[in-house]
Length: 513
Figure 1 (spheres, helix red, strand yellow):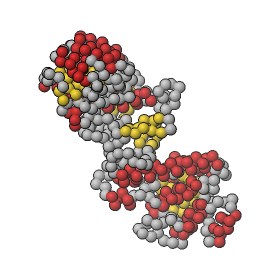
Figure 2 (figure 1 turned 120 degrees about the vertical axis):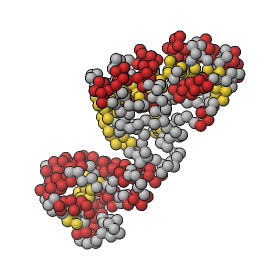
Figure 3 (figure 1 turned 135 degrees about the vertical axis):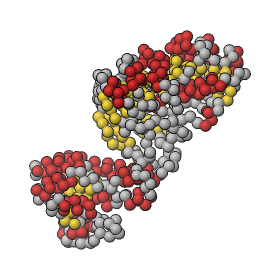
Figure 4 (figure 1 turned 180 degrees about the vertical axis):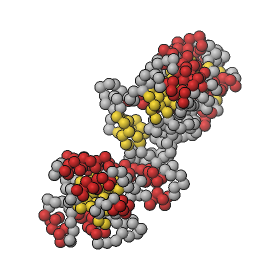
């Protein structure tokens, strides 16, 4: 039996090669892999001994040779194939152990040039992998060091099963597809829009305790991307608590999204993907207290998010209420020690500062539908919305205008039809996911109670009728921000004028389905 070993990731390589040698496998190798095996005292031949041809073009061409690929691709059951190999003086290659140049790690380095990137695109490796995987009934292909021990175990039994070979071949093709996806992303660069053909490379990060419901299984996959990543759950550290579930991750993602675009210290409390409490304040502990006051009943068992490091004063306040999880950039040492006392409390640190995003993000959002995916650019606050147009007789006061923009940022986070009431940069009440916008207004007013007097209202889309605005006026709302665009806009504006409400139109809606 003959094997070619040529790996970038040398974890477990020497022990695996020694195991092959004990099983009388003849090993051929190239470059750094061959040097590592020689240094460890493992018997190894150069691939040039197979090809009778030296490496050329600074090592760019080593294994691209008929003696290599003929030996891999020959079907052992076809007499003609075996006769052709014998006629050319070639032997079979029965195992290919290859993993590829570290392209993603290379381009992640500061100041990497296009030339550096191109030199780290593996050619011979993917070619051998594909050839071996194509001929997996006759050739064992190994791309993952985690498979070294199982392969040795199978070989030690005298035969590698067809099913195991097939599984290894599947992993091999996936390995190459994953690699090619990263290269295509890199060459696409900062180009925005929707490519005609696109692949998404995903790598399993963890199995989850369960899916959306306990009878559903779930896993968390990390997207392999060459783009600069925002602080995310992929790079986060969990300091305490139970294993994360599918719903935990969805809520944690919503939590991070809820605080990341506010410039002041901000705390959000998330329940079922919606903020039930949110406040921006110069004092983080006060921001938490006000966020909790938004809906202390709904907050129980939710997720807390902060865009600042959790200090001891804030941790002491959070400790008083039961939550499933908390997520923040970091934790002060004493604050972390306190929070870890709460049994089963999942404490997540992003490990990086959260800074407001500016302009349109470069990535795409995907939603699974039967038979395919929907793709869209992410929702964001456009330049147009920074200077909304006053459409009523009364202009908002400077204080109202500042509060209206805060309400606009908050309502963007909530599921449609969405209505929020805010005051002092605090979410007082919200209506989410209702078929009727007027019902959302009613729910927001009920939650806010008497605090609605002197508040401002944000609506993620236009009011189709004046009824919602008239209900808000009865609750003491003084100013409204909404997209406008209804055929009944003039009726809504007239109602606002009658109640001396200042209203601005943004011209942009923020549906969240």
